[in-house]
Length: 159
Image (cartoon, rainbow, N blue to C red; front, side):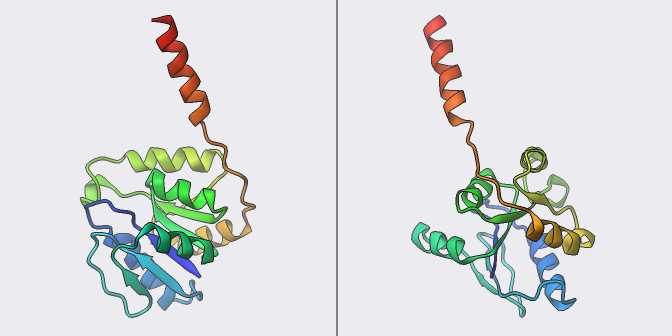
């Protein structure tokens, strides 16, 4: 099962859902797809959509899915990594009014560089992104939180 999550961002991200729909129609995606759409008002005849789910249901869906396709939100990506999922991420872009800026491009770039996720830039790249993500060996996520806490503590002690 493929789980598509758009997080809780208050702007629509129809572009990604259309890519998923087209991928199903073209036979690129053959698996069952469930999409958590948040504030994106989108109806698909090819996959099931739900607006919001509580954390308990979100966790169950995340555990069940084989592939996570998500926006470039840190929370969604980290959640997928904690569940050791193969992840494809696509940035919400300012020019499409999907976000206030393009910071998700930088987030995705960093996770791709570190070998955690696969990036989806546009519809033309869907088939290749799926192939790449499915071949990828999921590596354990190493958080930088402890290092950041130490940096802050050292700064506080010295100032």
